[in-house]
Length: 416
Ligand SMILES: Cc1ncc(COP(=O)(O)O)c(C=O)c1O
Image (tube, rainbow, N blue to C red):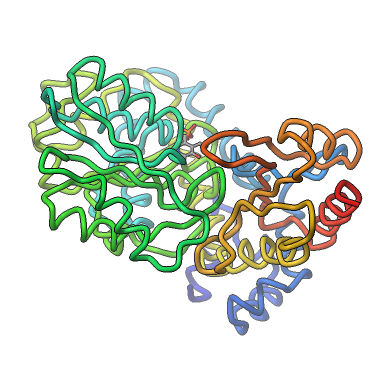
């Protein structure tokens, strides 16, 4: 990003003013890997957030809080929409929403005509799963480590249409991408129509070789739907790099937008065949907006999304990715291989980023998470399923190595 872009407005306020021109000049002179460990820089970012002093929050994977500038802009939108009420809804709403959607599409590297802003990944992926034209005997492929809501939605289609779900189980430390590709390929039959895979598995942080999975599936005539709930705003990529057919994400996770913002991208030629969950017959069958008729909804969340994009761009996705990977490796490198500790995250740095999961063999996951909070004031979430037993650790970019060292100390004491 050049300086002019950086100085672009965030709800009217200059981003240079937010971070300081000197700091910005210093930052742009450094590579992402260098800036990842520059605590002065991340300290400045941290000041843009209001944190609770009661605990160290290592559970930003559920919902990453908005920065103060984004939150204040969002509150401004709430006030403005409320003040103008139906006049706003009948006049400016749709143009504003279109402008936001175009910005999300630009960020994702896809045409705006192939993307809709939704409430979250669940709405996005369920729109595809429920909108697919299933027939009895059709098959879908997915992994046990996929998100429960989507697995349930596939189970519902099986009950309703008599389609069949084939579920693979992902190895934690594959020898190669091909091992993962072959695992999925082994579940494909001539009846398979759709394959779902995560870009980043939420319970382990494992990054999957999505483009290679998609190429393999396409050779078999199978469409590919990617759950990018945790990857968007976390990893530097453009959706076309992944060569899939559908991509969904939650923007209130790593993009830091207001709660209740997500997106769905559908490859142009796949739009026509999807049945909308909410009917809107004013839209052509090949118009993606047919999937987005969700009625009157809090439009201010969409408006706040634009401010979140500004803030996100100011930090820069390469810097964010480098910082998140650095933080994860900072603590996992200290505990991997220690007696009594199980890391439920790939050892290969390229196969994970900010998310990791740690288990203590002598403790149930719920007990570990409870003890971390009660004894060490560290907030995490227990994961106990699909072969993964531990606490998921998801630091935000502004979490410090010193805070992660407290986790390392806690794990040391719990396994002593
Ligand atoms: C991999 C994955 N998919 C989907 C979801 C659902 O996201 P949301 O609750 O924002 O719809 C999550 C939530 O954590 C997730 O981790």
